[in-house]
Each structure stands twice: as structure tokens, then as C-alpha cells.
Length: 556
Image (cartoon, rainbow, N blue to C red; front, top):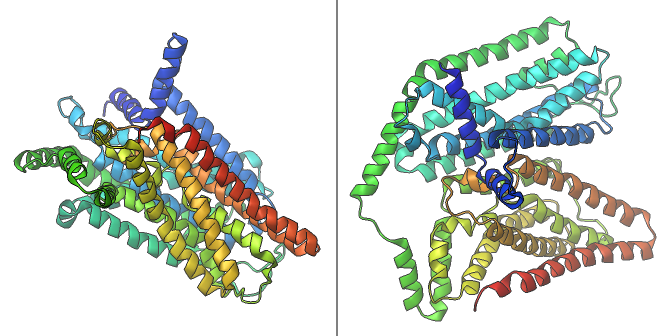
């Protein structure tokens, strides 16, 4: 293998995976009139490394508050498993986009690259893109090592090596599963349906497994020395990491490590012997088949169909046509899988253990009305981010967006229809889950309605924000959705946004609950009123701002 070429391909793939960061760098150079002394790939790599370090310390500080993981092997292994499963689902999407939805293969076909060189280069970038989702695992490993009496330097080195081992295994497992899935005949005929079904099934399986583990304390009710509450039984295949970091002299930990290394070696052999030799040829044949199919099939000009329908339609039917068109835009397997992840996976992981624990709020005082409204408002932040449907709905138009601007049709009406469509889609599942949550915990009707009202208001304000953001960062020449998702900072910013929303939201809701509980009646009323007025005022300000600054630029 020619490693210099692999390095060059890695740089190209790194730039390809972060087009918006490169464009931002070029614009900055154009403004200053001076070329940057730092090459483009080093700039991207440096930004990712910086965000990795920042994200690591944020998680390290957050997880180190109040818990000594050395006393809780069960909690440690469960947390590691949760983050591993979340990372696996994200890596599933990244692998599919980077290896099988990417359109860059046609540029490699005429060049004298080996299949193994292309594969290794892409795999290197894949590891970099998955690492943000595994940062919490590294934080847990380092935190566990530092909470023991072992030598700190050796503990940190050991934590980093174990982390790299998990990254390598996760990358190979994700790639092999996606690879074998794409070889199925049923997948080639129905890519979106099969990928969505598999992702949904794996998500449900992961949720069930985590809920089972977190709600079955197999360790019993005995509190061991150093524990404030009983711990769950440690998960066997992850416990070896705990043993290595806390009791490095015990044989069990090293035997467990040998098992993990054996898995890594077996996966590497499968990839090297059966995948890499055929990877280049299979992708080439697939690309040629797709090109042939597109040539043989009659081409229907979507722009003409859309514009024709809009021009000839009655005013009351234009909205229906646009909604059907927008519904067709979001029928992408990757987008649907991301939608399922953000709308179902995170809420169920956060609220599931509480629901299965038998929480009953039927007798909760109505004094908490402000808390539940604020909780519904915060819930919107947990399910919406820059990679939600509303955050890419304009860019999904591709060149159709420019074509629609050339038509004698109100762009303001066109964009508002997009916004309302995306808002309805984004609100549907959280609203249904909110109703289910109300029923399961037997929440009083008034408090439940306030919870849903906060969700409705918060979702609209955030949808408007991300909708305008998509227009500001409009990118119609994208090759796969990963390019759209990476706008504005890439995976690290997305993960920080999601985890930050969860962390800050939980703290604020807990603080409001404490104040309502501790303060006298007049104080409770004041806190509740503020908990309602502040989100409403903030949302109203956002709507008013965009009504003045965003919508006037479009003609009626």
C-alpha cells in the first residue's frame, strides 16, 4: 500500500466531508486579500481537534460532579453502553453516506488508485467523524482512571488506548453491517425503505436493551462500601474496561481485553480479505449501473412539473401541491433515520427510565403549572437542531430553488409553505410522545395542556430560527446529506448543541421545581409567571425580528 497516496486521499476526503468550512476559509482569505499560511486540510483538522478537546473537558467536568465511578461499576458500564449504542447509530448514518451515497467515486475511477488505498483513506476520515459521539466514553475512562489510587499518567494513557480500541471496533462493525446490507438485492431495489426499517429496528432494540438494563438492578438492594445508593450489576463484556482501569493487576481485566482484541483482529481480517479486494469494483459497477438506469429511463423534468402545476392550479390547491412536493423532498433514508434518532431516540432514552420506574404525578399540585410549560418549551430544544428537517428543507430543493425564484410566483408564499410543512413534521412526533407521557404518568389535564403549549411555542420559534439559518447557509450543490449536516461547524457543534440542550435544560427545570417547592405562595406564583413569560417573550422577539429582517426581502 502506498501510504503517501493514502495520506493525500485522506486529505481530499477530509475536505470533501467539510465543504462549508473550506468555503468559510476561502471567503476569509478573499476578504483579507492574503492567502492563509495554514493549508486547508490542516485548518479543518485543527478545528476538529480543538472542538474535540473542548467537548472532552465539558463532558469530563459534567460527569465528574458528585459521582465516583470507581464505586459504581454497574453505572459505569451502563453509561459506556449507552454512549456506544448512540455512537453506533450515528456511525451507521455516516458510513452509509461517506461510502455508499457519496458521489466522489466517479472522480477516482480514472485515477491509478488501489481499492485498499481508497478504502483506508475513507476509513480514516470516518474515524474522525465518529469520534465526537465517543468523546463521553473517553471522559468516562479518564475519570474512572483518575478516581483510583493508580499512577495518574498510566491511567490516562490506558484510558486513551482503550478508547482508540473502541473507536476502531465501532468503525469496523458499522462499516461491515452497512456493507453487507448494501449487497442485499432487496436493498438495491428499495434503498430508502430498507435502510430506514433497519435503522428503526436497531433503534427500538437499543432503547429496549437500555431500558431493561437501567430498570433491572440485578445487584440487589445492598449498598456496598463507598456507595450512597445500590448499584446495578456490571455488564460483563464492558466490565473488563472497568477492571483494567481500577484493578490493572487482576487477570480478569486482561482476559477481557484479549477478547476485545480478538474481535478487532477478526473484524480486520474480514475487511481485509473479503471487503477491500472487491470494494472498488463493486462501487464502480454500482455507479455504472445507476448511470445506465438513469440513461435508459425517461427523464421527467421535475422543475417543469412543479412550475406547471403551480401556474395552472387554483389558489386553494397550490398549498396542497407544495405540501406534496415537500413531502417528496424528505423521503430520503438518511434524513428519515436522522429524524427518528432526534425525535424518538433521545427523548425515550431520557424519559424512558422514569416512565418504566412507575412515576405517578396524579396528585402533583397545580403550583407547578409554570414548570410544566417551561419543560414543554425546553423539550423542543431536545428534538430540534441544525440537522433536523427544518434545518435543511430549503437546501433540499437543490437547483429547483433557483428555478422557483425565476417563476412569477410569490417566493414568500413558497417559503412560508415550506416552513409550515417542516413545522408540522417536526411537531408531530414530539406532540404524540408528550400526550403518551401525560397518560403514563397520570398528569393532571391542566399541567399536561401547558406542557404541550410550551412544546408548540418552542418548536415554532426554533423551526423559524433553523429555517432562516438554512436560507443563510443555502447550499444547493451538495452530493450527500452529510455535507448539509456539516454546515456551521460539523459534528462537534451538533453534538455540543444536543448535549448542551439536555444538560442546561435539565438544570433549569430542576431549579424551577426547587424554587416552586421551597418558596412561599407569592414566590411560587412569581417564579411560575416568569417561567411562562420569559419563553413567550423570547419566542415573540424571534418571530418579530425575522418578520422585519427576513421576510421583507421576498416579494409577495
